[in-house]
Length: 129
Image (cartoon, rainbow, N blue to C red; front, top):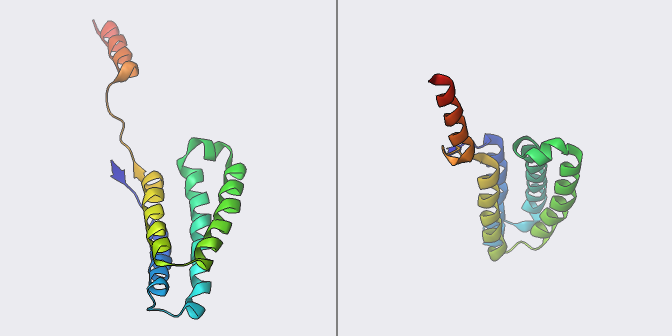
C-alpha cells in the first residue's frame, strides 16, 4: 500500500474541517467563518472531481460526465453541510474525508498470484526449456 496524498487537498480540507469544528464547538463566530468554510468546501468538491478523473478508469474515459456528477451533487451537499453545521456533522465530515482519502490517495499494490500470473509463468517455462 502506497500513500500519495495531494498536499493542497490536505491543506484545503484541513482548514475547512478545523474552521467547521471551531464554529460547531462555539470557538469561532459563525458569521465570520461560514463564507470561508463554504468556499473551501466547494474547492474540495472541485478537487474530488479532478482527482477522480485522474484516479478511476471510468472517470478518465467519461471525464465530463464524472465532473458533472461530482460537482452537481457535491456542491449542494457542501451547502447543506455549511448551513446545518453541528458537532455530529463535523464528525461525519471527518469520517467522509477519511473514506474519500482512502479511495483517492492510497494506491493498492498488486499482489502476485492469480490465474494471469500462473499462465505467464507457464509460458515463460515453455519458452525457456
